[in-house]
Amino acid sequence: MARPRKVIITCAVTGAIHTPTMSEYLPITASEIADVAIGAAEAGAAVVHLHARNPEDGRPDQSPEAFTPFLGVIKQASDCVVNITTGGAPTMTIEERVRPAQTHRPEVASLNMGSMNFGLFPMLKRFPDLKHQWERDYLGNKNIIFNNSFGQIEYILTTLGPLGTKFEFECYDTAHLYNLKHFLDEGIVKAPLFIQTVFGLMGGIGAHPEDVQHMKRTADRLFGDQYRWSVLGAGKNQLPIAAMAAAMGGNVRVGLEDSLWIGPGQLARSNAEQVRKARQIIEGLGLELATPDEAREILELKGADKVGF
Image (cartoon, rainbow, N blue to C red; front, side, top):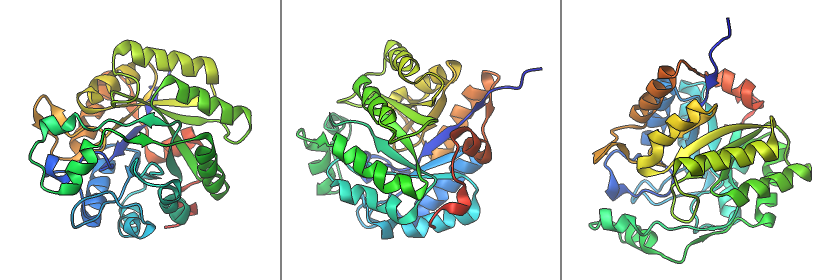
């Protein structure tokens, strides 16, 4: 009898988009980030995707030292795959963005595959009373371009690739898939590619089911069996798109980086709560969750014994 397909859940626990005023459940300090990452792994996430924040005011912090306290705690408590951001925040330089992964040499690092407009300002309508001035300045900026040029992408690939780190290729639009194909054709990246298609963020592709199907069809045509597909739905789109992807043969990403919500008007109280919802969807389809070691095998990762933390 055929065995059920294994689905990788990634949980992105804090990110750099949402700000502290938006939710009391958003982890800010190193201990909070460690706790929620461990909780997400215990709930079924094989991969945890990590950003760091300033513990005083919650702003994104891409210094390697900000990651150190929670990386060690997570590794001691869990065998989950650790994925460190190279996206950081769209206002940071490429050198800032790559430094934590360069220092800590994780099994996986995220990599944004193209430049794009980055529109967070609609959030001000929902959250008008922000506690910190940096939140208002950051969210209200209508001139953010998230800069990911070919040269910058190649810089990250050639900096982290020799360390054995593989990539979660974040593709916010169709052109980003073509950008990735360029690096595959040049031999700078190698299969299997872990492709995270991102839906519903202002400046990228939308979150209509046809958008999801279009990105999947394009990836199938460009990469065939050389990639492993996952999806990220922003905000209210998180769980509907997760359900679509799971039914279409994909993996899923959830977490408070991508959505603060667990239902209409209802804040998620934890990352683990979102993981459990995704798990219900996956198991309801007759599929099984991938364990961390199964995720390592599927993605052909170097192993937790070869990281730098």
